[in-house]
Length: 415
Length: 134
Ligand code: FES
Image (cartoon, rainbow over all chains, first blue to last red; front, side, top):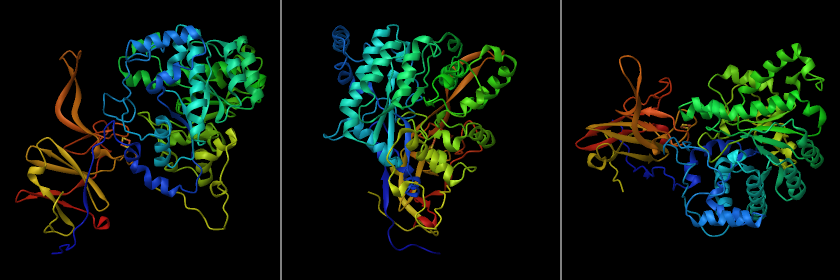
């Protein structure tokens, strides 16, 4: 019999709750972080929770009447008031996942609470740069009043530029375009394109506005002029008539995020926007990847029969799509053969950008990329950070450039 | 504070009195670098490593909640959702749910939590800890 004589250290671990410090919540990401410490990690889609600081946003509404209305809503009590709601919010699976809704972990005085929360996630996951998007405002494109979208969209942009981005140079943003009002979008680009920390612009995809409409051409020209990319950030709408047939959040959420980006991408390609604005880089954000090969093949095969309907195209639709950028999350990987084929179809080595979606319920840690069995180390480094660094012009520390200083091989993390 | 006592078998560690594990409750412990959850179901204890098979999340530190079932009438019409007597351990990273009795994912049993050997002797709870952790 072999009996240990010295006392082991026994500690009791706390159960996780909405008060758990992000660094504790994500502590188990530490081994991957350690292995990747000389890798550049850029997270191209994470989220702030802007309604937790809503008065800071609404105080920045340009229009005095809408600002007054937002204040009046606020005096009624909780709730974001002027912002439209988006149906029942089941994201946390009724309290099973505790890092998205009702976050109440304490933060000390000092930097803005949102900046601190983002920093904690970056530190826990080993992320060098994090590009942030809003959360409830992802459905602002369905607001019945276009002027409310303009007011809140620009107020949010100002909040990021004035309060958040200056406090941490590693936090970046693709600003909000009030896309239901095309001329206002041009003003947003002209007003904010040069603000520090702004690496591009985004359309929240949940809306019913056709991207091919002539009223948007000034916007695309202005964006192309800045050299900064345009992202389409997916979202859901359970109120959409087709989705009202779906009785479970899982079904609506699975399809709705993809649905809106599928429509915008189809319009984008078939109307020859890549030919009209060849210098405008486009990113498809938070709709996963599995839908992309479907759209490529479907459009290619119909294109061969109905070329007359898209005369601006000089190549097959899939060839334009291969020039676009995609964020990785939520990365479908229950069938690795399909995942590998998808990566090949979209030229992932150069076009794919890692995204965590933190703090949302279906987030992907960097291990979602490092664990993929079919990728070489160079491809993993590109996807996890170097592609984004090139796209956004981010500074890359020499030690993280992926260029080996010595002939020694750097091992690919195997988990 | 848990007093330590060597167990009988190799790497067996006494982690507490049975009374410290309340009926229906659970605790998550770390012995040196080895983390596990101990779950009490009636008189029975089960224990699993605190490492989710999905992406390594702290599965035992999440919630334990009853499994949701859908009740069907004999004619296959749905009578709606209800809670079952079975309980699941829910990983707090992404919500994967594991049967507390078997450790298997309730939607795809090929994914399972790694069991940890736990025994009760003389009202004391002993856990076998892998040698590498000590
Ligand atoms: S790590 Fe446990 S559900 Fe994802």
